Every structure is written in structure tokens, then in C-alpha cells.
Image (cartoon, rainbow, N blue to C red; front, side, top):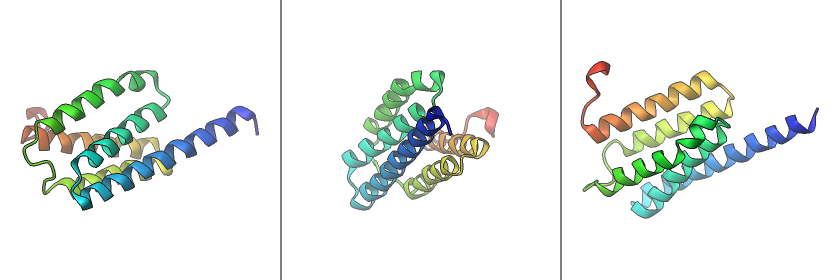
Length: 130
């Protein structure tokens, strides 16, 4: 096995471990209803997933996504909603797809997470998705 393959495998395990830890932190923060801890864990989760994708385009989107998350959280009167637990489950589906090294499942899980977040923020799905 080449050093490159070993290095990539170790990096994948490191990213997976970090993403799982952020998800645990999100669940813990939700249980404690700690807004600041949840925001920190959620932004860490998304930053790690995007950077871990080893995709130049996605890596460039990190700051835009983080800014979007912070704007979303700063505008919320009620931070934790009836959908928060389901959102955490959608985050977990992303993690499990990454762990299974299933790109199609990861794309589908990430798309479902984004769609649900958009509905939560905007109040409804865009017209082209209805």
C-alpha cells in the first residue's frame, strides 16, 4: 500500500472522527438548549465536511456557508424548533453516508439536509420543488 493511500485513509478517518464529534456536540447542545454550543458545533460540522470533501469548489464555499449559518442563527427568535431533532437525524445521515464511503448517499443526504433547512428558514420549498 502506498504512502499516499495510507495518508488519504488516515485523513478520511480523521475527518470522519471530527464530524462525528461535532454531531455529538450538536446533540448535547440541543439537549441542554445551549445556543452558542450548538452554533459552534454545527458550523464546525459543516466546515469539516466541506473541507474534508477534498474538492476545491466546495472548499471555497466554506466561508459563504459559515456566514449563511451565522445569519440564519442570528435572525432566529426561537432558536430550537420542532424540526431540530429531525435536522440532527439528517446530519447523522450525512455522517453515515460518509462513513460508508457512499458518494451517492452522501450527496442525497446533504441535499435533503439543505432542502429541509431551506424550508425551515423560508417557510416553504421554492416553487420549482413543489
